[in-house]
Length: 136
Image 1 (tube, rainbow, N blue to C red):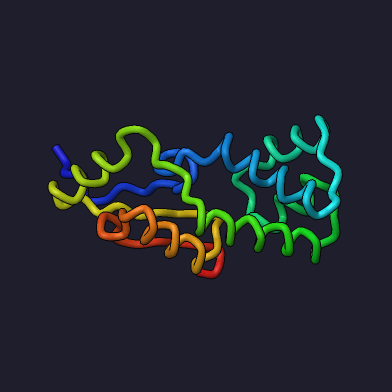
Image 2 (image 1 turned 90 degrees about the horizontal axis):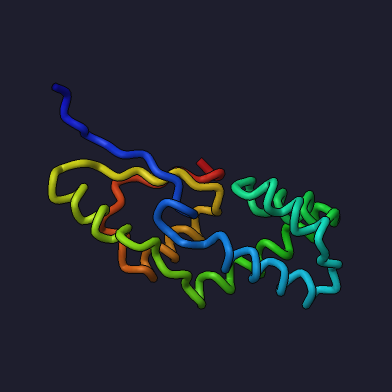
């Protein structure tokens, strides 16, 4: 029998319960910036969920690359100030992994600066062994 030495996880979904709240935040930010938000845009966002943020905004809303980046920066800033709660049991799973010597690695489409701030804000940075972002 082999011993588990590491777990690789996405952040949004398995650890952070961000889908519904994140979608609402994105739509609110888009509206605030004069971007149309309807059924078609929501469907595109849902279909492309998990895509690198600026691209998600650009393709989901059909906006320019520059606007996609601007919307994403605003979303990141909001998320850092208004943290989304963890998935039920996520903290306990992270604590368990650490107690058993299992490294938890997070792979995410979030920007490095943002994910590090969020992990710190959620007080779970100590349980994460390694973070891989698009900048890596």
